[in-house]
View 1 (spheres, rainbow, N blue to C red):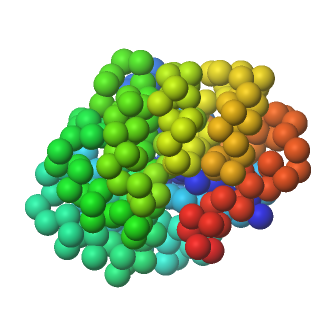
View 2: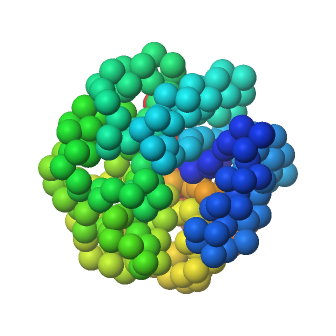
Length: 259
């Protein structure tokens, strides 16, 4: 089994615009179209069995509609597990978390850089308290252009909420991989490998995976930024041991998702 733990999807009518916006934000060409069918097609191409899918709310008003959309798509496609979205200014986070759980959503994704809040913002600390011990959280982490998602901020959250199942996307700090290692090596959280190997190189990726331990890593593509099938090829070319591959490709994900 292979689980892609990081994929963004959008309704067909807005997918093209969303992909353009993401490309402009990161100044990178996009490999996917952002649609459900595009993701499924890539999964079949690469032999990827399951995807954790989500989208981030840029404003409080978008929270419920995005959560409804992700939950609806997951009911139609057994290949998907849905994570919901929240925003620091959402009116009643406890009620929305309860509603998300009733919808069948299995976690939460935050993108502090796009949502414009610090990971350790006091408003967010109240939300993490509601999520601790209940739902896993994927954090976009790292970007040399911003401070919102600096790995040091995630470290503060982990210290404050030791029972929070936290996933630091992009090796814990996109474009700040070694800084992330300084702050997160001795604090327990998971990491996904998305959007990173092409930037850091295969040798450094292996060093970091083994430095942290393969039991902390999750295979992930960051679709539509990358084609999941190609991401899988990049990962397998690292030449890790079979037991390391198994942990990263599905075993760690199954533990988090309780599959």
